[in-house]
Length: 184
Image 1 (cartoon, one colour):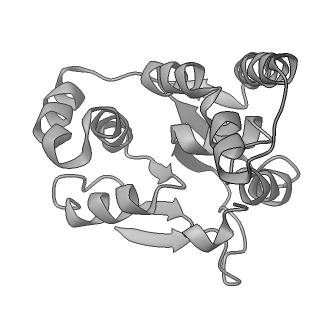
Image 2: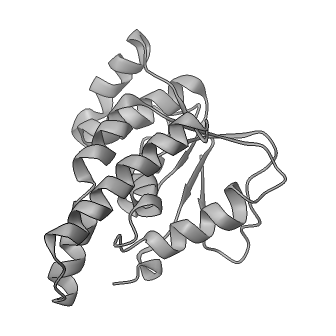
Image 3: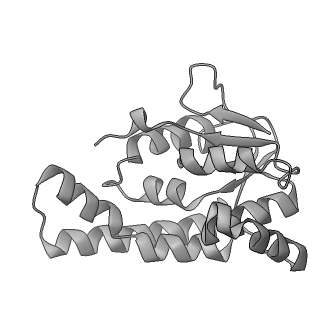
């Protein structure tokens, strides 16, 4: 299993036909302008995913969609706590609505393709849940079941998956980044 920092100067993009499970944090950061990772993830999408001659397949599962819809307001609340800035409820509602609309657009336009687990991935999920955490175990086990790579902003998760690479043999690459690329 290889860890590749998508913000490294050596990163030149995804290879043709790359299949990647996109973790919750990536989608949330892309869709929510208040997310501390928004700029770096937006740059990744603009330069290496959406405006790219290579065909890249991005996958999510219902757990990831559930997490994005549940966490949609968290970035703006974190921004307010960190910066001390104030925004009105209309702005919070606007951002929340924009995240849901953006998610629908990505699914409708098949930018994100939906996959799901099976009996074997659920057993792998159970096996990994104490070490990775419940939601991360779902996502890692499904990526492993499909033999697809993984895209995350969560360095801890990337490192923990690397530790468990013997149990996740079918994930060859984890694309990740590091905290210095956060905006606040």
